[in-house]
Length: 134
Image (cartoon, rainbow, N blue to C red; front, side, top):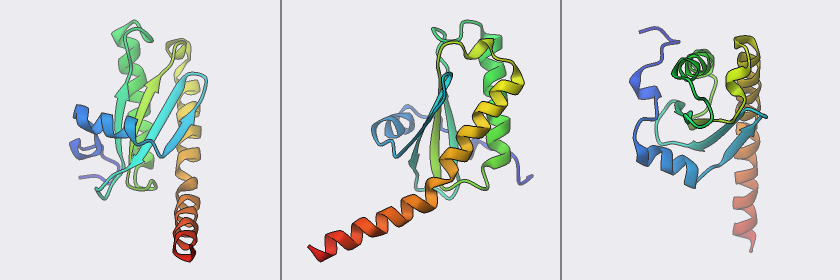
């Protein structure tokens, strides 16, 4: 299989997996039209799930187009990302954007969410040192 494939193991499918991301959000990235929540997982790869409500995006063709664009972006960046579960939530007005605008928006969110992984580990190490000194 290609290195940039999007296999079933790279997807969040079960309601319990979505609930874990919502309940234990470690990272959050947002834009006016998208919200991305992330939490670490026990697997060795990043995974992706969608919450694109009919209330926010009325037409199925628009929901499918948005999912396709986000999946494509994730597929190309998944090897660079830490072992996190990402859930992408749509906000109103997303369907009115063209493909290029959606791509730029999600690429910016991946960049912001990918970058703090080293900072998060360093911060965790600092917190552990503080606890041991007390």
